[in-house]
Image (cartoon, rainbow, N blue to C red; front, side):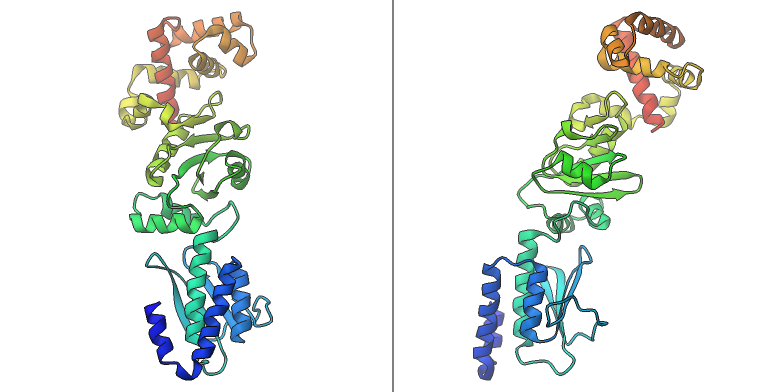
Length: 346
């Protein structure tokens, strides 16, 4: 405001016009306009094409004085001003005036940049669930510095005072549908990264994941740590446990850190591998159901089989493993070996 006041002091012949420009933008902000409406009003006031660009999303808005999207190739910008938020440049605004600049162009752009920053802070860059993958990666990457991460989260629409949970998901449904299912009433953003989908949300309803989806849920807090947790938890998912919150893994999460050579050399894990390569393709499913439920009858219910059939399968599996599955220690050994084998083959 001090810089603006100093500039106005040098605009004596146009001071009245400058004050009107300021009042014009004050009125727009009171009406809580969005970026397109802000650009339309500014283009009508300037009498030329007005442009707004957000660096984080790459979004560009160009509006002609008639209020329509500018279809003509961009003219060389006559005046450009950065949009700053929390002392960081998040975008630019400009005029495409064919002739010489108007004496009030700088004042207009100053106010437009201030208004654009306020709109971004209030509404975020978009109302959609799908987000720019580069922006999501910046928010969750361990290589990002804190300032860049904070800026990315703000551009994605997350308030600075709310924790963000990260979910790593594989699903046949589009990510935006999964995101709105698990977080229907709060901010949620999604993007694909490599072979896994990423969902950022302020809340996660674990019971609302669609059938067939596999999901690892990170704890709330630092997004980069939550992303690492979510990826780890995703590796522990199974057909009988398709959604795994990292906080529920406890000491089991340590298995993800076991060196591959050590895991492959373990006798129990090697025995699981032999079963997987053998002709009895249902044996691992039976073992998984038994390890998940810890009960012969509950495993039979889960598999929709008679408990005597499950008992015979478990007896055969136990002999192959060399483990007495009816003993608590044997059940623990089998569960750890099966989980470790899955981590090796993830």
